[in-house]
Image (cartoon, rainbow, N blue to C red; front, side):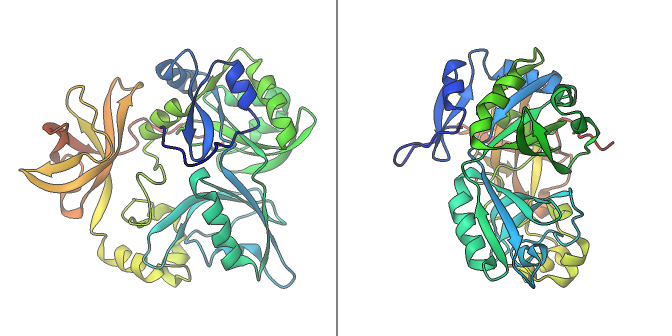
Length: 373
């Protein structure tokens, strides 16, 4: 979860709090971010699965799109993404991707309709490129307002609702993939019932100066502990969720990535987004490869880049792999040739030059626990 840094690292509004809590800070997406706290990744992972964890995701890019007279923001955004944005009711949220002309994924993003504008959240490492992409494609139809200084907190876990509803009772009745403006500790925040752990929880967009006070308020509850990037990665891997730049990128299409569910049914037919003809062809004929879950035998961890072979022949590559604290075993995901992608297929993963037996299995590895009412 660390990377080499080019130039000085940026800091989120919670930097001082991370240091105070004893976080180990590492370079990530151009920011100095907490990878773990003194309790360690395994404890933080279990805390989130069983109780409630607070993540700093303020490095993500938040953008507001407001339609100019004579235009609609949803119709404009649909020229850049395959998701059904026009069908979003006020307060609804949707996951989609920016695609390129070959159907590859430039980034994945969350879009929420507030009724009079769209709120977009993009990945930290892509946010400057995404902003430029939106400015180039949407400026005629939309006012594009980057809100990169705002904080973003993810409160995740089965007790997240009981915690947040003490501060703002309306949070309890929100359903998965909905959002609303809520007053938290005197600050106007935009809250969605969403997250990237596979469990129940919220993402809370905060004014920059309110981020630290709200984080401290949430951490004052006994159920809530701070969680770093390390557990964030193991949680999303258990949930079978893609990490941009690893499991999806410009060389993968939404069909290959098994993200067809995120493309509106009408949009699959009508197109009108970059790479539509490639994606439509893959929908009709099948993609050449497919993202799959992998269960290796034994304790060997197959990391990104490990080869996937059958009878000595390469059939694919691992894109994410690690230890699942919930299952107590190694798990991985990767891409394999479509003809070899059926669940139950026996493969070998090449780990440090040695073949490790593995099986292709359905995802998620750990059942999702989203609150749907």
